[in-house]
Length: 496
Image (tube, rainbow, N blue to C red; front, side, top):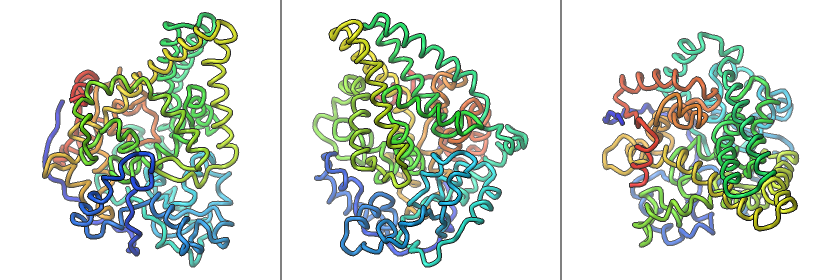
């Protein structure tokens, strides 16, 4: 592993000033997370460390407060004046997306994520040519007198000198200007065919002879689809065709997940606010059983976590199942509201689950009996859970990616007031890479997590080339860039 360590100067953010929002911790809203004893101390700590902490208590906190408070009758989420619009906010201006949703070049399922929130970070991190894209946005109707100040503000990626410089080099050196024709969304078609081909063979073997071995082989297929095909598709990065991307994204529903819940949890909560204690759902969703962040309260059993966590990973798929059904019922994930989700997207959750249960359990039970179906289902879930956890959980949960060491660049970045953070720098500091091209193929680029977080809408096959640029620019600025040579090396660090 190689890193360089120094403090990083972050330019002041240019976002417009706004009134502070109610200072409520997101963790307080997650009643089932068992972190209530932590709330008072957490709020006191943040109040001491960040006088304007309320400005960074963002998306879900403000939305829930607005929607459930008697004083929020005229909030944009409940006021009939604004409910007639599919509104979003970009850099302090409210726009009506209604007429543009079905004309969005990447499909309506991606732009739906922007509805009912500040979309600045989503918008700027998904477009390699931000000026061209912003000009299209500025042609949309502006909502006059919209209460923009009541909307939790988003990070502003385009205010990051690091991000802007890397992006221009990527366009020039990797895609040579061909990104205008969609070159950045191509190249992974062969990998998708290979992965889906293996999945179909594994599924046929499972249905013909359901058991421990075939269940494990199908679990590997499910994990491989989850890491690559669905992940790339749901980011809109598998193809220049929105229909292909949507189809690839829906494979998440077939393997037991939910493409709808994944998009909101992963893209709106995790990607935009990586390793932020209040706003990144991945930081706190496993608590209290697993504690992946030193900012969370420590329980007596956490000192044995490095031993028992491997016994909990096989249950990961079950956790996804319960979370998806809960999210559908409550119209939210733990990290964000599903403001833009339409009826078709919600229907895919139910249809996908029914198809998945039929393939994994119902058909095997009918063909081979309940004991064989139970064994095969358990093998599928355990294998998929362990593989997924061992490959994606490590990249944001090693020491370098957490605000642990006093004075470290990561600590300094995440302790800055929310509005003053450099989004590009935060993505680099809160992620860690491992391996190279081989790992990139088998994980859909999730081994190169830094590059993926900077460019989620670029096909993973381009990440190795982009990594050289990112590392070079980080070295110029003395920004730590964490890279481990192998998966076992980062898993070992993660386990410790």
